[in-house]
Image 1 (tube, rainbow, N blue to C red):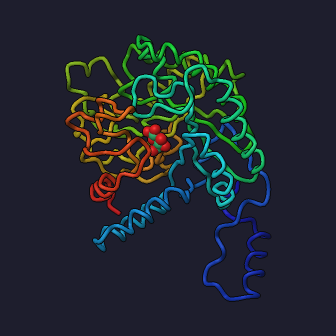
Image 2 (cartoon, rainbow, N blue to C red):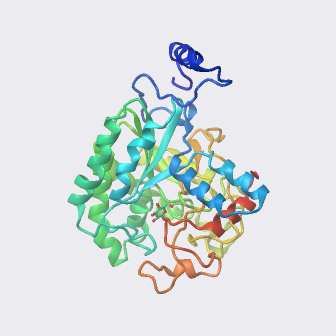
Length: 393
Ligand code: BGC
């Protein structure tokens, strides 16, 4: 559809540039010349490459400035060329998004994460957000609405969204926590509002569905799928919802037999021992519940397996490596693409026990220490991911 410049645009670009000079390569970074039309009924990654955003590239440029090993520096520079999602994790990030969207060449798709619900990260502390429980009106008017305006102003750019990591899965499995009880109605209303308002022709949406070790337990499959379907239907079953995002900021392998935790005593209660099986099995539950069931899967940091002491360990897992690069070649018809959802090198949470957002998971024996606040650049962790990357850079 829009994988390359149209013939006319291409010849025009050559003609213009050749007046001034004779470049060896045709100018690459041109936006599409007409509106992009995506929909929940086709895989946007089949025709569009995940965009390597300038924010992550800048983080890596800064990281390289402090490095001395020439081999590692050369490898690090290649990471800056890998497509990854940019997290809109505070209202203050919104004004930076327009320029980033305008930088996306035709044939590429920008990945953005919607992540600012009131009472965010209700089952943990590391990513508690800026909006308190009850601030749903602010979420709508100060967060979602301005993002919608930016997307509407850029109809010629393809946009893929991951919707609110961990939020709906937490309502399924952590409903016993007072914090998640308090967040529940705001999460449901907020996600439904986001799905409804962001339902634009140039946007395709994937709702976060945790991972195989979360909603993949036999007893969680049906409630999980129904929990997502309830919110999707409350939003009016928006046409641009393509399905789910799995393993976001996670560590599970795409394919591994036996799975990392398959032979533990509990293994018998979970058929989703890798993300390939999760996408297929949870996908069937989603279909039964009436929710779109295609998936994107985060492979950004899952290269090295066997590191976690418990399946639920999520914070800065020590020994991890960059995984498979973004690709729509997944071998599973329900899996649209492998993506880099979590920008590798950004922390999952602080290991400083005196910090307000200190979560004990970031102090577990398998968590890398010391580590800075969630989202902050973590140089030592980045270098570790780079050294342990599979395939290598
Ligand atoms: C943090 C966000 C950050 C994201 C990506 C989350 O854990 O809470 O602030 O943007 O990770 O690094």
